[in-house]
Amino acid sequence: MKIAFYDTKPYDKKSFEEQNKLYNYNFKYFEYKLNEETAHLAKGYEVVCAFVNDTITKEVIDILYDNGVKLLALRCAGYNNVDFKAAFLKIHVVRVPSYSPYAVAEHAMALLLTLNRKIHKAYNRTRESNFSINGLLGVTLHGKTIGVIGTGRIGRIFVNICKGIGMKVIAYDPYPAKDSKIDYVSLQELYNQSDIISLHCPLTKETKHIISKSSIDQMKKNVILINTSRGALINTEDLIEGLKSRKIAQAALDVYEEEGEYFFEDLSDDIIHDDNLARLQSMPNVLITSHQAFFTKEALEAIAITTLENIKAFIEDIPLDNEICYDCQRNRENCSRTINNRCF
Ligand code: NAI
Image (cartoon, rainbow, N blue to C red; front, side, top):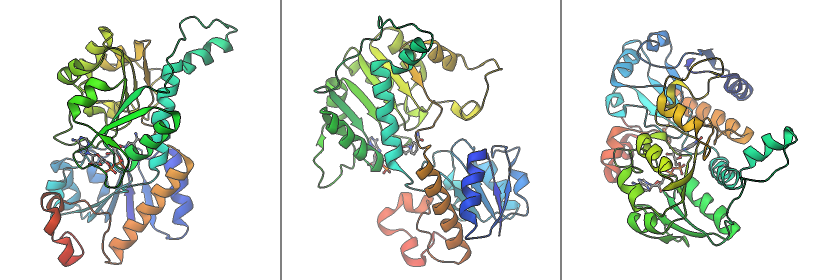
């Protein structure tokens, strides 16, 4: 089995090579991202392995399909970058639904603690023998209200971490977790009451720009915003306005709306052409990490194992448990998979 692996970084190669000892698949690693210009490189490969910032449009799907690709194995949880309507009846799409929800929830809390207590600034100061604490004032999180948007695998773990700190947790999710002790409120109540808001919902048509001027207007003054989910949940220009006016006191972002060209790359010698990103980088009350919330040893191992198991299931013609398909999304109750074990 030949597998074309796009957007390869050294750590991907290391973890996949380690796990592949049990499978012996033939990987061809490309550093290129998968897009319309690079999709033809998959000619002769039945399986393509892609990541979060690959752009898998209808055009890309068609090129892959015409070149004989039968399976798109995403090595990530989110699939907002895939036109899976276009893939339906052409290419099976599988993903890694959960690899380490703890890793992402822990990073969200790390961002909040760092941002609030300005640990990143203190670290730089003390290395330069600047032992002043002027400007490093934070707030005590115990007793503060945190609003969690999306209480799936990651959101629920994050809720527990917050409760451990003694925060009051409220949440919004159109599909509330059953049997949980989570205090669900409407989105408007969440905006009105939260001192901190953390995003843990997927990027969909409904959630795109869920944080925009109209939602920011409903928030408390001095709110802190944390986003470890997907960049386009936030309208960046509205966020910048909210930060400039100090309505939003601080923001920590592990994801950014237009991150594709920048995140995961070392551009320290380059000019950043995205003015919104440059503006956010320049703000003293913004903390950016480069989509690293997932990045733990355990998560990389789990990603490699699940991806290889997804590919194995495809080769052995057994049910693709981690398939995402247009039909299932439209017709969850009665999808064709329950008849054929596969989406087509
Ligand atoms: P999940 O599918 O377990 O949970 C998502 C939750 O969001 C569900 O409970 C769902 O009902 C809820 N939801 C759906 N629409 C909503 C809406 N309109 N408003 C509020 N909630 C809504 O997903 P999981 O594993 O918890 O991951 C959440 C997101 O985290 C992923 O979609 C992905 O975008 C992001 N992620 C980020 C990573 C990173 O490294 N920064 C790594 C992994 C995931």
